[in-house]
Length: 110
Image 1 (cartoon, one colour):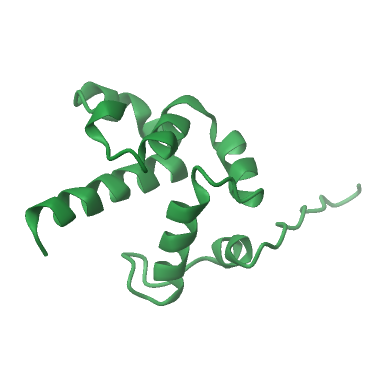
Image 2 (cartoon, rainbow, N blue to C red):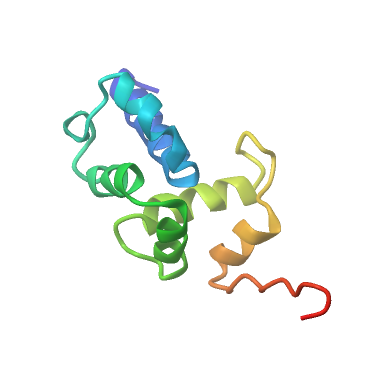
């Protein structure tokens, strides 16, 4: 893998981490990493990750928003195939990949 490809992969990983955990945003801001440091195709996803809540991002994922879905869907596929760090996608991630809606939990007595 060439240096440019390695950097792009790293920026994809950072963007994916931010999409999954927007609370990492302040730490990323502290590094000086900004939208201009990202390739044009990752900038919209990075901006979404830095400015939206986790619930808003989940809604975009469920709607397969084209600004984040190509990246998110690609990574979920990698996890499902077992090449990701976690060794496999969670049931919720697999459901998102298939376009399924997560089930609402029922609380006892309701």
